[in-house]
Image 1: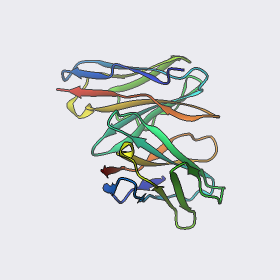
Image 2: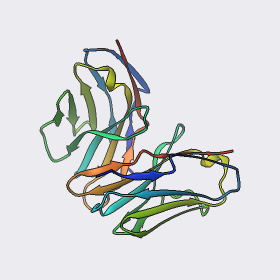
Image 3: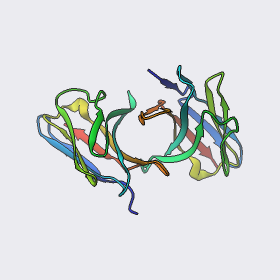
Length: 112
Length: 115
């Protein structure tokens, strides 16, 4: 298995632009998580899904952030419009009962 | 809400020596799970070790072991025979028992291994 796949690995965008981050979980994993990592706040959970349904989105910072999981093999995190304070590393992780959590390599987002 | 505290922002160890990373957590729950993750410069989050709160025996994975003190809400990681490849950020994480699968992370400890 290729693990959790995130794209792009790096993204640089201008303030005000729309940004879409993508995640392909491990096949058979029924939970998917989006985390954000910054120096100041560490790793924060943004949202997680169970069987493609959002369960807890209390960590989504504001309405500029949205996440979808249209099917079991794909999820997106969208920021519109982006701001410099959104600069961070965004991780996707998936989970199954047997193997626990597997993280992707993250997307480093820089908003200038 | 549960909180996880790692009081050591940075630690260093000589190659082949032993180092202990500290973690404390705050919870009112009796059923939960604790984890240590390693994040090398590649950014990948790698599970090092996991402990179920209901197990009294401390978890061990090769050179990595934990000291789980449930009453004290302490969960330290001991790395024996440190290797250069152990250099990384280490994160302690907490997960409630039951159906809430959210991981709550500490701020991390940067471990340097000196040759």
